[in-house]
Length: 177
Ligand code: CTP
Ligand code: MG
Image (cartoon, rainbow, N blue to C red; front, side, top):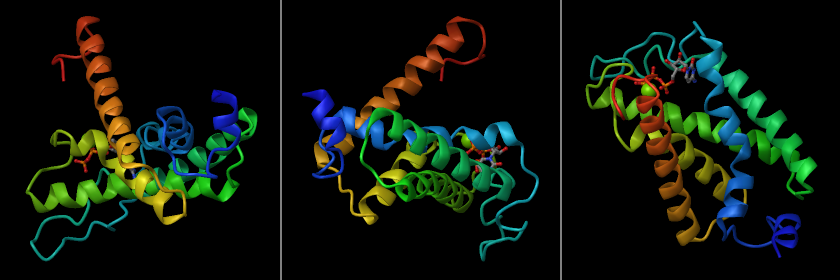
């Protein structure tokens, strides 16, 4: 039963897309929050790495990291409470933070590859927050089954693809990707 699965979430491996979607709620709130905040203080303090390029770049700010972690933690925990899910409040903040650290790790990799801020990196740009949230879940003692982790990654890519194609067809974007 879906309801039993939801209340028992976290007692066993995360092994359904429903459980995955619920435990990812803090990450799904945290990831888009920084875009709305328009921070000004770069996490890397404007410093370069040993290769002479920025460590993370101006697209990763303290304001984004902090507001995203708080928004994801608070709204994610509230959603869990309303759904009757028995997961600790602190986990919501850890998953939100994990998502944003995953996003920052992707920027670190992009800079090392010589990609400028905002340059597209297919798959990395879409899945960075998810990999961070997944790692945070595992490290906090909430492991996922391999097939669920892969299915969730596939679903996230599919949602990105359909949202972008829809935005293109509606004339909101110049390219369908
Ligand atoms: N953002 C932020 N702080 C963060 C993450 C994101 O302020 N920790 C904001 C920035 O304004 C950023 C925007 O959200 O430009 C979109 O995020 P993202 O697409 O991840 O950054 P990019 O600008 O594309 O830079 P990068 O190439 O490093 O991914
Ligand atoms: Mg980007």
